[in-house]
Amino acid sequence: MNAPTQVPTDSTRVTAVADLADPEFWRLPRSERLSAFARLRELGAPVRFTPRTGSRAPFHALVTHADVKAASRQPQVFASAPGVTFPEPAPWAKAVFGNSMVNMDGAEHAGLRRTISRAFTPRLLAAAEENIGAVARRLVDEMTAEGPGDFMRAAPARMPFEVICDLMGIPPRHRAGIAARIDHASEYVGVQRRGRARLRVPGRGLRSLARMQLEMAGIARDRRRVPADDMISALVRADVDGQALSSRQLGAFFSLLLVAGVETTRNAIAHGLVLLSAHPEQRALLESDFERHADGAVDEIVRHSTPIIQFRRTVAAECALGGHTFLPGDKVVLLYASANRDASVFDDPDAFDITRSPNPHLGYGGGGPHHCLGAHLAKLEMKALFREMLTRLDGIRTTAEPGLVHSNFDNRVGSLPFTFGKGHPNGSLRTSACR
Image (cartoon, rainbow, N blue to C red):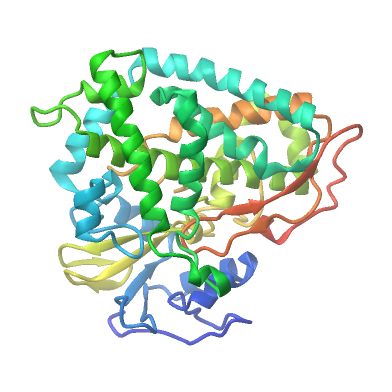
């Protein structure tokens, strides 16, 4: 399809083709957005959308599993540079903060990824796996002592953060400040500001990143002088094109690891509790033989919730995909949230089924060179935490619908009331977030 196809929509309903360029679309209930994606998949070719503001370029939406997977695995055609999010990072920001690996292509990306991958030594990973179990046990100890409340202030946010800080070797005295800066840096990613939020001083997120990178530079200097058995020590002594990782490169990687790794994993954990609360038969199956079903449960939680909704790409060479010819400079969005509900790949895609096999979801980036480096650790974290919660917190369950953040970037949970105690989940809560 070469001609643009676009059907306007308003903020209260989705028509035959939704306007993904309209910020109001991303404020619709998640069930309506998923229904819109299903209708877009039925059109048989990528749809072109034109934002109403002149500061954003038109883009095509890739919505089928086949198209998203193909684009993910052709980085020479669908480039991550100059940026995978909107707005794209400004050149001055890259110069100051360093370029994130997620926005790199080719030899630059391959070299940095190879260096970071080598830092994940077998000994470091074995220690991380043992530590993940200890962190999960400690967090559930604290949940037991503190009692029910907001799940997002308990285990989900703290689990990935503590694991990453332990893995990197971040001293405890730095962690509270870094956690606050992560929240500041990610607060408005993919979110349309409204009301008083528009009046916030601009650059708050960038200032938080700058302060975090200054802290990382200080820790890196200490590790260069006195190495430890942690990832920062491995990275600052690593070699990239004949040079050790600079403080800027380390800071950019750490920012990516924290903002991406913490946000995606805590949201997946939260959606997992929502899904298990709403589907007692699946929960009972998981509890009946946790070790047998845990991997399938984690994959299905990630597929069903899809923590990262979309990434952007810039076309680098003319190509045909999904019935459309793309030209250099065209913008596309890879809608993982749509691809993971593609009925041509997943039987009954809206169902939550921890025994689903095969389950070729694209929740960790669709494969290819940008497949998530932390996917293995994220799975271990989810399994460890759910093992502890399901065996030690009797009847742990949500008590109301999650407070979702209206974002076009990630499937973010802002708040989630939960409880536990005697008895078992009644399964009566079936929230819109479970669609």
